[in-house]
Length: 276
View 1: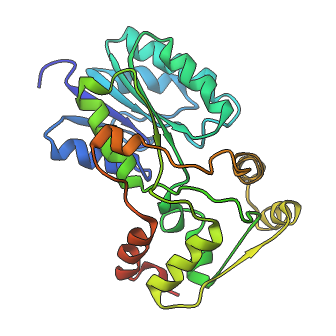
View 2: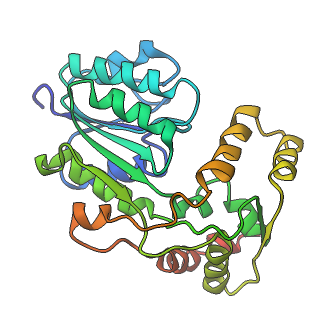
């Protein structure tokens, strides 16, 4: 392996990072997973880990944990991006939030680093229902959230990863901002109905007031910063600003995005949602 051959994938065990690693490896691209448990540990909250993780790296998939709307995210992304470019990593692909004004500060600082950049503005992930905080309620049979009739164009993490892999390996994506969504708009109740149909189980959806939802999270011992982030996403970002489709998957890959119903059938076939 020659120097500057590696592609660093931050969040390499996360919903998108894991898929990006697999996609790059499938193309024969040498990769390094940027995780706290890796051979060269990476931690957004410990800048001392950044430079060792960037050694011999030519490109980086930048996924910030927990979200670009979190306090301190723009400063961390900006500092990391400048360090990466100074160390020789020219290609930076940022996973950003669709409709998150706070995330745009991180985008701007990454763009100003001098890198060859690509921005991926993603809608809510399909896989939040199967690999994240919505999994247990689906398995238990009822999803309770402070989300009403505002639709969201849920996007599949496999589509995000496919676009990221393309952007990390093909110069034609440099300087592009891709709005990544699924092919149709669904409310959370619609999404749960698709899951219910796919599983053959009765799975309900119930809307609650935002204050009641926050109180329930507090009672369950969820950390305050996580509660604040979830409340921001449900009460601010999910206000209708994203109730339209984006063309990023088609622009980047030349194909239609995956549909939520297909995701639901595929996941249900594996039995995940029936493991009560």
